Amino acid sequence: MRNRIIFSILALNLGLLADSAKADSLEQLEYGLAEAPSDESASPTAELPIQPLPAPSPLPLPAPMPVENAAPLQGATPNEATDSPASSTAQPETPAQPERKESFVVQPPASPTSAKFEKKFEFQLGTSFLPYDALYQPLLLEASLQWEFKKDWLWEIGRFGWAITKLSSGLKDQVQNDLQRELAGVPGIDPKGIKVFEGNEMKKLRFVAGGSMGYRLLDGELTAFRKKKIHHEWIFNLGGTYFNMRNKHQVGPTLGAQVRFKFNDHFNAQIRADQTIGVMMKRQNSIGIFGIGLGYRF
Image 1 (cartoon, rainbow, N blue to C red):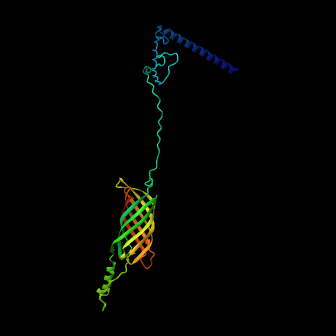
Image 2: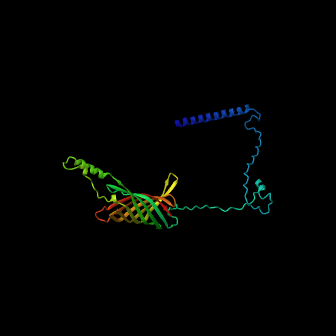
Image 3: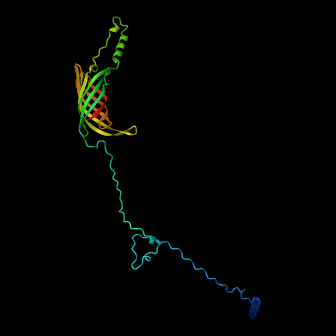
């Protein structure tokens, strides 16, 4: 019972304190309103003068592009057909140009032998050398006649070579001097009377004759002196050759090759190499011939 009385007294006191605080706040509010200025211009809620904003300027529109060959709208005047100022200076109508298409044709380079074939003869003049013999090497002056009767095929109608000289290797004199020196101290032998006699056949060579068939294996072009183009041909030959050695003879099949360098349609230079296998026994049966020459086609 006692506690209830104490709580009641405390609640009454708190109520009285709240009423007194509320009364104080009302008095302060009335006092502030009484001291506030009476001028409406100083009031924060006073109306300010309103100024109208300037109207926004319209953005410039781009000029329309002139349209060629454009027909005016139906029911419109010439000035209404278009709003562009460029319409007053209309361009004259130009016919449409057809589209040009360029075409390129790649052609392969012409081959030196792609031209039309013509049957022609060729006369050759040159010199040849026979180097295989140990004692003498004949030097020949040669002439030949060829006929190109078919594309890539040649017929050497005849070749003739005359021996103009025989070059000596000096082996005979060397052997003779060695023998005389060795037999100088032998009693009863005169070294100066010793002579070496050779039965050499190349020393007695008089002329060479033969013929062959040739086939052009390949051809092409090369550049000389950075400007001049020279046509070259590689030819394979198969034929036979006859060697006249005064009272002895030799004959046999001949296998050879030659390279030609054409300067123009008529003149050319050539390098030739032939190998003959002789069929005559007890005679020189392996004879090689190397030569150079010039040719003229007609």
